[in-house]
Amino acid sequence: MLKGKIHSSRWTGWMVVLALLAVLAVLYLTREDITSPPHLVNPQPATREIGINQAGYAPSAVKIAYTTTAVGEFSLVDLQANHAVFRGVPTISQKERNSGKPVYQMDFSSFQKPGVYQIQLSNGRGSAPFAISDHVYQSIYQTAMRSYELQRCGIALADTVSHVHHEACHLAPAQVIGGQGGERDVTGGWHDAGDYGKYTANAGMTTAQLLLAYELAPMTLKNTSLSLPQADEGERVAHAGEPDALAVIRVELDWMRKMQREDGAVHHSVKTAEFPGMILPEEDRQPQYLYPVSTPDTAIFAAAMARASRVYHSYDEPYAQMLLDASKKAWAFLEGSSELLVPESVQAYRIKSDKQSRVWAAAELYFATGDLRYRSYVEKNLGELELRPKKLTPSYWQHTSAMTIITLAMHQRTDWELTQQMRNLLIRHADQVVSRINQTAYGTVLQARDYDWASTKTSLGYGVHLAVAYQMEPKPAYLAAMSRQLDWVLGANPLAQSFVTGIGMFSPVHPHHRYSAASGILVPGLLVGGPNANANDNVAPQKQGAKSYVDDVRSFATNEYAIDYNAPLVVVAGFLHERRN
Image 1 (cartoon, rainbow, N blue to C red):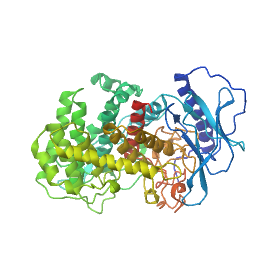
Image 2: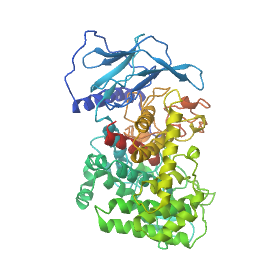
Image 3: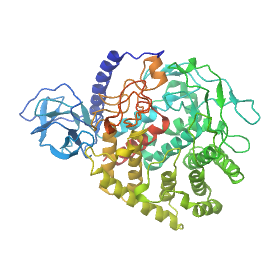
């Protein structure tokens, strides 16, 4: 029995209001007079018959809506003036993989006037409202990035924007498992997912990708305020001049440093022995355990700290040096240690090998220090990476090949032939991703095998690859393919479902998220896992591909959030805003 109950009718009503307010707010930022054409229409109730990006589109973006309903015409309706501003004829795209129904595309890319709109079919059915605005992607970035602040552990939160609030939590020292035992202060950081555990490997991959967002979209991250809660005022004063995004990431980096032992090794995780019920974080008073060190965790830690040292150097040189020292210390442990994995008895993010992560750590340390011994390690162990363009998949804590390749490809060294090789590999990979996207009904990169854990993260992870490829070879097709992955996640899919809380009329209101369930307050900006054909929780429908999803608090396989899910959402939205595509 759940201890916290979300009142669905109240939430659904408020979510509709919030969705309309959100698109109207975006419109206000770019309001212009719109000349009314003669044909007036009435707004239609929003249905799930039309899949569309429910946040909206930049004026110059590719804009495609989808339906399986056969109609002769569709209209784009200005919801402020109540008139049709564009008409078109749906065209058959592909057939849905499971149902075999034809999917019709409704392309209105040529229409670029800012405003708030609805797609209407000739049978009178309407889509969720959405905006066309230069600020759409910035708004998505801001909401997704800000969500990390609302996942903070160890402090009292009272956010006037989202109304998320709770008392300080998980303040007691953790009991060390193995070794000399004892206790250790590992407070702080972010709650990792829908539970209150914290995991080094996931934190390392997440922070590294968020720092990649800074490298790919520096002006967006520098110039976008996150309106951080007043409780952080002291922290902001202490780090004056640092962008809000880096202030948020610093919270997790500081927690990660607490997970490192004196000998450089890094602990795997801190959490309770069993997952708590659906309770508030301050009510989770079970003993916290600090689980053993491992070499995969240590390697991912080393990689993330080295990358962070490069980014923070221009804002806080002593802090950057502290991060680099922690990275070097972790590498020293790796050099003197054979593979050490987390015991199978630990309920955890269990990594099967440290080989890929060691190469990633060496690559990051080389670019942070210029020390040739790290470069030599990468060259000798390059074969540990997935170097086939067709087989390259987005990185996560278990497989870090893509992140290593991105690091190698993005660095500006001209004296290393390997850098150019990795750039060529990513370009070939990006071309194949675009081709795959163009062959699917809803413009998603996802294949049948990809409807597994965190399919939404996978979709956006390929978007990250396309962003990096665009940096090297600015093909418009890369931007278009990238934006279509964001469209899919925000509602341009068979369910007309946005998978980000608080963004879109049809977005999750019952995520598998303990704070939300216990408080009845939805944390905005959380990307849930999305369709999972295996439906491992036996709650969501199984073997239905893109339709294997349910907005149910019990569905941890489809409706849970995790910090690493949000990272590629931040990268993609930030990059698209930077390019204003």
